[in-house]
Amino acid sequence: MQKNPGQTRAEKGDTVSVEYVGFFTNGEIFDTNILDVAKQHRMYNPRQDYAPLTFRLGDGKLIKGFEDAILGMSVGEKKRVTIPPELAYGKTGTHPLAGKTLIFDISIVDIQKRKK
Image 1 (cartoon, rainbow, N blue to C red):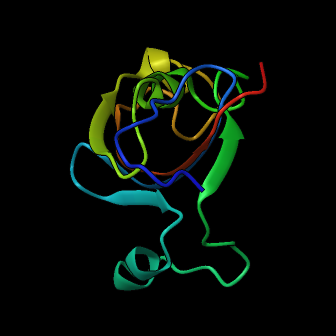
Image 2 (cartoon, rainbow, N blue to C red):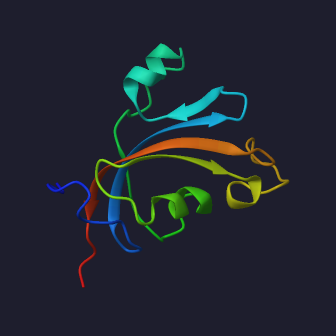
């Protein structure tokens, strides 16, 4: 675990762990990995793992706007980011979130620096 909040900033290639709440511009929450938030908003799913999302930054496995928002953040830092459709699921398409502007509250839980 990163012990010194604010000391290390997330860079491409780092493995980061984040907590998040995703919502639409009208305030409706559509996703979270925080158990208390899921229960409070009556969206708890017993099959979902409510734990920090861990991924390697820059691999492109998440929407571009989400990854871009994490670049430069440090452990303990929180941020609200608005992601337009073109940096999320596209302006059009078959994905249920296509054409939607998404807002995320993101908190960095851990950063593991890439091996150089």
